Image (cartoon, rainbow, N blue to C red; front, side, top):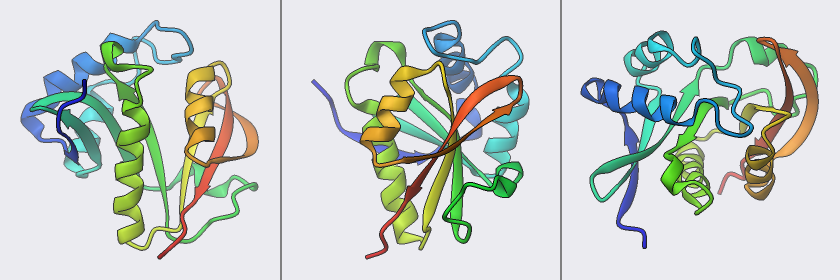
Length: 165
């Protein structure tokens, strides 16, 4: 049974918890993360940019997602949304909570926040071998816009258009 959940910005004193969360999924089916990624470099950068969000259930961190400033993905030719977009990365849910709707809930809360900020679209690269992630993004309404090879990995480029209300 789920307790109370909220999504908030991560605090610097939670770095070790977040590192452990990343480590807990490395080597799992579909996960392309390795001993070099994600590292303290990404955690520190995300924390300093206030771009790392955590899903908290009953006071315990059970998931995380990074919102990175659109940069290298911007130039990909297949995006339909190009203005007021966010790029998400490093989506993770604790292994004992996977397959129970936590990632969907976490991202839905994030996307509601985006809508309130006037964001029009969300971009993410999903490893082709990560079938569970592909199913999640399809369920959330993402459209597959293309395929690319980045960072030594084959990806699907997924985009969500947010309806502004």
